[in-house]
Length: 424
Image 1 (cartoon, helix red, strand yellow):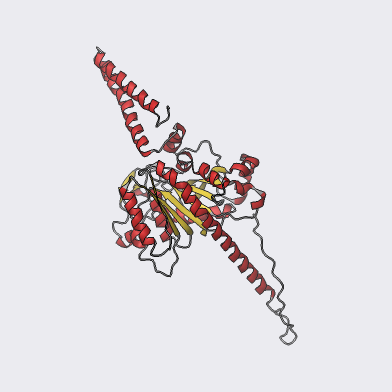
Image 2 (cartoon, rainbow, N blue to C red; image 1 turned 90 degrees about the vertical axis):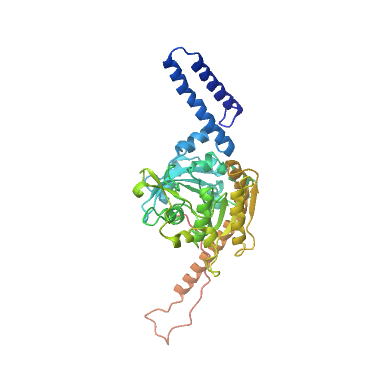
């Protein structure tokens, strides 16, 4: 009732605004009239913001609004703050979480990742599913999905606004999805910016950080598959564009891509002045001087230029039926992707370019993506095991350097033992 979309909240704002206008009318002294008029701007401004929020169906609780607008994750443990490493992360998990509860509900935590090549340092939220803490999965290397937020936005929007962990846990409990680690990075370096996950010529190399360095860091610190077909990438709005663009430009790093109300050609970015973190944002079309890069970063154009012999990730699309631009763009990209793939699902959801649509699309997207990633993980494990057996067989059949050719007996091929994944 009194939430950011509640009728009671709107009535309070209207009453407050009316009372202040009445004060302006009856006040005899000019100073009080001016003071009341200034105060009247506050409920009027809040009413406008609340109306926009209700239209887009974004913030449903005050906690979600405060957390997302401040980029805050105050309620989450911050693990391996000094640098993401397997040993430090496991120590922090053991110390700051309840293993019994984690094995039932999973856990969300915040960490920090620095790219060794890009030198970008940003916060990342990670959700470990319940299976990560269960004995039956002790030696299982999980698939992973990188979830990319919109702009303005922050990683916490996935948890506080879109409820991805709650929905995913429900799907896992009902056996409608397969367990996977969810990775939610800060893709912009602050809510003032809109980098679109692009490698800015001569500037911030955001795509390299998001698409390569973050997955590599996660795979080295957690029981997660290395970047490849067992990784997925998904996003909404700007994050949907990122998911489409990364999937086509970083072939071999992701096996599936989910695009929720995304667009398919780059728009003007908001980048830090002088490409310095924390500097004032400036509007810039980063490919203005490079048409070739503009084409390469336009998924709706570039998908037709990728050689047929190269395998592209599987795509899944969603859009709100009330936003014609989103629907038309999704249908156009679906038709182009279907030239390369037999089935490219497109989920048209009631609503517009809103949080309501993205929340509704999350479940179907995870239900579609996680079984594929799990199957790809099994294939990757089988291929790695076969390669290890072959390598072991070759090392055992190499003739000794001290033995003579005539005296050497026929090579013996011992039966190779299957390898097991160890949590090192």
